[in-house]
Length: 344
Image 1 (cartoon, rainbow, N blue to C red):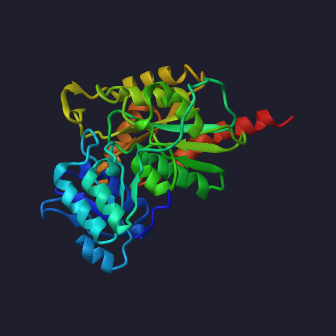
Image 2: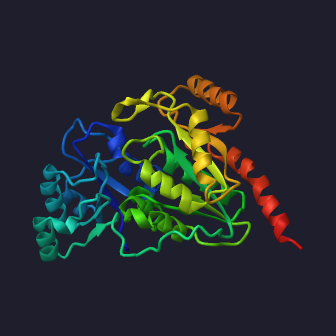
Image 3: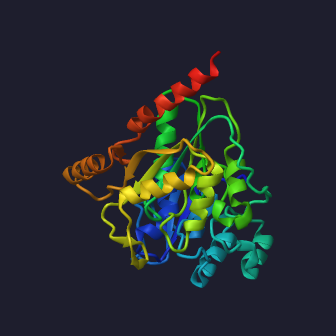
């Protein structure tokens, strides 16, 4: 896919920041691509970008409208169709990470054909995957896992990748969701694969590599989520991670959207993820906890990080507020051990 920037980030009318995580993620990690935002209501999430209509955006040189909201279930909402049609008729391409394909909506498909606009369904790749082999691959891998959904697994992976590269360590960020793919320019939308082949897709995403190379794999879902545990399980098996980074929002008390499911303790989350990961990598271990401290004061953040360090004995960090240098320090001993093993 060759999706052209700048982007107009479509925010619909959602007031929930969690629903706008696609747009927020692109803005945080690729701000140079973000030319403006398109909101259907003044009460919608405001990212601080200039508000445009599609026609105004096209006149300003914006090339693609990106669906920046990801509601539960991943469907294109009926009230979005007119907004998407306005973008297509204005000459903008449209990129979507929804499960619903843009081209499956006849009005959008016909309007795009008439205007020449391109429709990009980021969540739907054309690749096919084998059933997972379970065979050990060369190279090293770190996978972000979650206590819950939408707790910062993508941000943690991006921060770790950035810190590795800054340290001069060979590394790739491996995107598994629509926002990550838009940020990285490639990847596999892992939750759109056929379930029997999801672990195989994870193997294909992070193939064998040089012994000192790290793949930083974006996690999805949570083993404790009643709807999305399956994709987490397949990623843990197919990724064969050497290191796990557990992502957590300490302000939550239950699984988001599931009040009958209390959050597990960090100890329980670490134990279960390590147990599952060790089916395909007997040496998998948790090395760090990523904490979402957004909207905390400096003092609150410091207390939260200190509490997690005390509770788990692991590195605690916030991908945005503190960066991930401390995680690299935890990974380097593993890297040096691998290099030592590879040297005659």
